[in-house]
Image 1: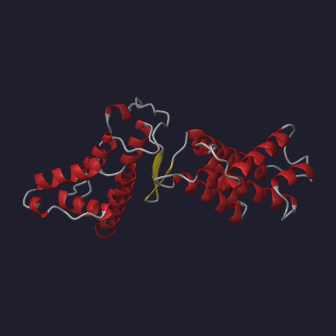
Image 2: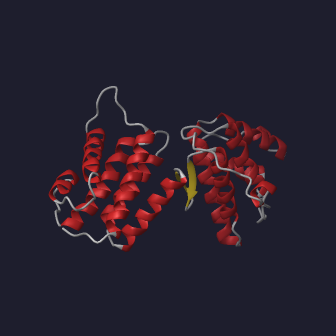
Image 3: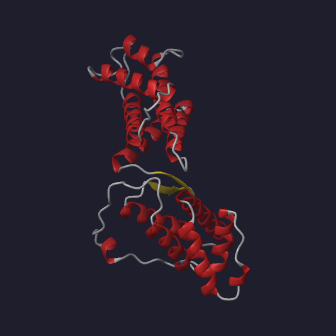
Length: 274
């Protein structure tokens, strides 16, 4: 396995690769399954080590009758990859990245980084709602969503508010769970992060966000304070009280996480007069 510089295509070099809107979350299309194996091959991986990783992830035994030629092992790898459950494809991607990172540690180079870059480009180009970050696959939102969350995370880190930052991180973790995202959990932690910030800024360690907004009308401009109070009530109800036949959708959960991140950044950057 050796480092191989993957050259950029014409469309990438000249900016002719518009990103698709995100349409794929709980699926792994055949094109992705093929592409993962192709990138591993482009980076110099022989079929046998790839098979070992895939078999370990899927907890299956390699077909020893196919050990004598690379082409037979390659066929087995393709079969395993094309028939496994969608969420196992993402487990395999993480495992391959980890294998490349271990190889990089011993031999230098950045095969893991190249692998992550190519996979992430595929996700953007094909509208897949995942991304590799620090070797792990996490949920990917729109560019606006990613910007809002990044700004909020940075603001929380700079203001030394670890509890609020932890809640925001947990919200993203809940959106990233496989095979099923914890959408009520994402809503709960998103609003919990915002509530932590509001409590700290106002000196009300036990008050709910709704109570804080009533007690401190200057915290947000009107009528945004009233609107946010209603959003908090909605999120609290959806996250804490399960109603038969009513499930929060991914779009609603993402909206709440993004809204929480935006308001958090606003509160931390403005001088609060109580």
